[in-house]
Every structure is written in structure tokens, then in C-alpha cells.
Length: 263
Image (cartoon, rainbow, N blue to C red; front, side, top):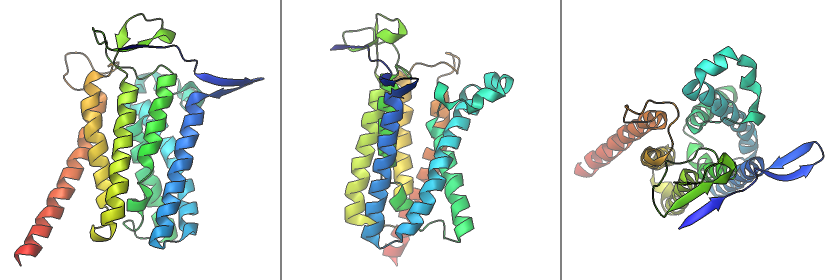
């Protein structure tokens, strides 16, 4: 099946203002993320005031981290020569790995300022994050960016806006499906097992599922940074670190659980 992507990245033109698909979809993801967190906070009897407070920190941390991640992970040489362009978010350029770092830093700062234990809220805060990632990737599809490698077959998407007439893997949609799948798994497990799991279980589960999936999807994404003779892309190198951390967490968790049963 071949699909021609000829979408305009602009949804509406309101005089000098352009309403873009990417911005709209990103906003939808952020709003849904907040609503899911609010539902979880109410379900667990947590203070909604804390959610409203930490949400501001997380939003800023996500944006700043995503931008700096793109700057330093993918195009550091260019931005160091043109530092003012770091602030030009409207030109595009956000990295999910940087967003994760920004979220961690922002949440850590919020916990220190408000004197809240770090492990108290992450497991309910992360439930909706995969939806943000999903809508961002759909926005990337509308923008004809973060495309996949050519398929050399009767399957794929022709990105006409790039001036191409051949098919590529719709890598953005692969990641969107991955994110939605992770979201469904988290919600199902949360509703059944939240009270029975240790702190940070869902945080590490999210990272394990998402970044493992990202690692494999990177094999079909177009590579612009790492030389072709290197087998792994920058996205894969960056995904290995959280995956390794998650494996260590779950190895410790299951070992501790096994020791308890033996006693």
C-alpha cells in the first residue's frame, strides 16, 4: 500500500498568524496528559494543588529540555555558531530524549522547592506522557519530518512536500503507534496493580517500553547525524542509557521480591 503525504503543515491562516498541525496536536497531547494526571490524582486522593503546581514545572522542563536536546545531541556545531537560533522554537527542533532529561530536572527541582519526596508522584504523572509523544509524532508526519528510510517496495509513504517521488517508512506513525500501545499498557496495569507495585515502577516501565521500542524503530528512520558505517543511530545510543537503567531497576525489584518469598 502506498500513500502520498501532501499535507500542508499549516492548518489555518489567520492573517499574519499560522495555526499549524504540529502546534495543535502538541497542545492536544499536553491537555490530555494533564486530564489523565488529574484523574489519577483524584483516584489516589492526592492534592490537586500539587498537580497544578508541578504541571507548570514539567511543561517548562519538557520544552527547554527538548530544545536543548535537539541543539546538543543533533546539531551542536551549527547552534554554537548561531546561538540566537536556539531560542527560535518556531523553526522546529525538539528531541524526545532531551525532553525526558528536562522533565526529570524540572520534577527534581519542584520536589526540592516544595519539600516533596521524589518518589511520591512520578507513577501517576507519567501515565499520560505517551499520548504527548503520540500527538507530537503525528504532528511530525504532517510536517513531513523525521521520515523513515526508503522502502524500495510497494509499501510506504511518498512525502511529496519534500519533493520526493519514492516511498519511505512512515517512521513517525510507527512511533505514534508505539506510544499509544505503551499508554494502553500503562493504564491497564495502573488500574489493576498500582497499589501492589513499588514506587517508581510505572516510571521505569514507561521508559523501558518506550525506549526499547524507539531503539528498534530507529533502524528504519533516515539517519542524518551518525555516519553510515556506524551501526547505531544517535537516537539508539541515547535510548540505550534509559533502557539499561530500567533493566537494573527491574532486576533489583524482582530479586528483592524473590528473596522475600524465600524467607
